[in-house]
Amino acid sequence: NLKELEDNLKYLTATINEKDFSSIISSFQEDLRGNCVYCNHCLPCPEGIDIGRVIQMVDRVLIEAPGESGYKEYQKKVNFYYPGRIRTGSSQHKNLSKDASRCIECGICIKSALSK
Image 1 (cartoon, rainbow, N blue to C red):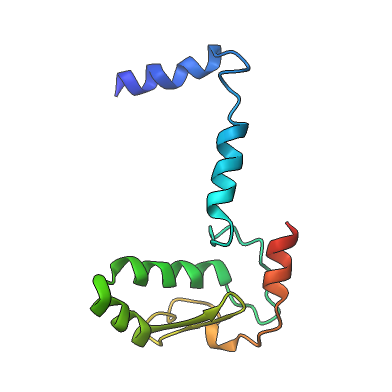
Image 2: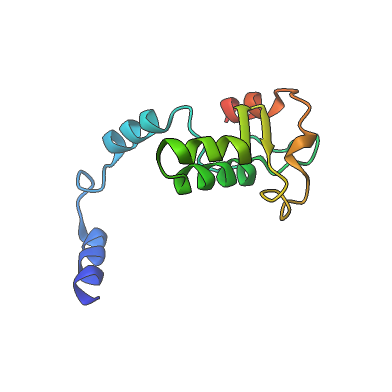
């Protein structure tokens, strides 16, 4: 809508202080610590697993799972031990180029993600 466009264009004439989002960004980064944002910094996986996509599928199942009974259902569909060991049910991974069960727990993904 026109109001949103006008608000967005105000950024072009804003002062440097008005454009400084560093305090917000550092707070945002703290909030995200330990959470996957599907950036693929953990790649390449030696087994060819699309780790970001697998974790995204896990998150979708969690979001769709209603309450405690949903979580139990989630456990049947997805077994997510820790970031280096990702397993999904067969119906979840059919669209992946490599099955997540190929994970060999080498930890390279964790080291790669933490170094970037």
